[in-house]
Length: 281
Image 1 (cartoon, rainbow, N blue to C red):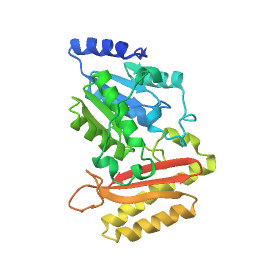
Image 2 (cartoon, rainbow, N blue to C red):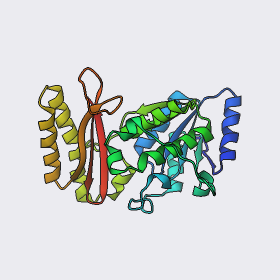
Image 3 (tube, helix red, strand yellow):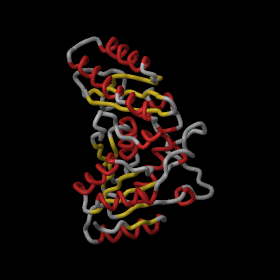
Image 4 (tube, rainbow, N blue to C red):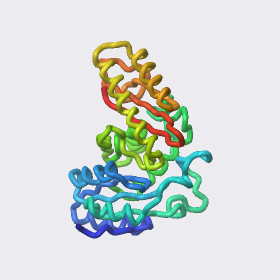
């Protein structure tokens, strides 16, 4: 395995990328908040197929957390993360501190619309996508990467990032990668660590109910009835469902015309853990 260069400043990051570009090599970025799992590492592996060099950022972004959310409790395990990146074949880890990302006097942010305001995650976390778009824009500009990779588990986020990069003319190709799942279908997430053993067993109902509704939709059954039944099943199991909806797969607009790609999305809370997932129809 190759060494992973760990850099903590923008100037160090750009020096490495400048050398790679000067050598004619392309560069991929995998933005993360750490607590890496197989889903993140699958993005690194796809980055190695898409570019000559792969780097990952590790930064728990305070601007995408509201005051009542889990910023302080979010798992942080830098040494373990860097070892996982090394084993996956990454070339570099960019691990900036808050002062490097948001220097004193920082006063600029990215305002988002389009897929960011479709009444899904934004309805429950109205602060979230502005914080995501701001930090991702900074990372794309700081790293000067040729391609950046994001998981489809956070599907609305993926569309927001694509729109942001397109609208701001950031010369980076944004690639969405298929959700990586546990053996029972649960989408991998750093927040799965919050689940108790009993909750973890129950959590597999999320992908099961997604599949149930997807099968019903494909069979031409009534969408609203299928979603209502699935939501009731989740509620009986102890979930509090924030949303369970069929949307346009490109825009997330509520008009999910069968002539267009469609996406079934769900968010539900189980104990103190909020789980999100989606599948294409």
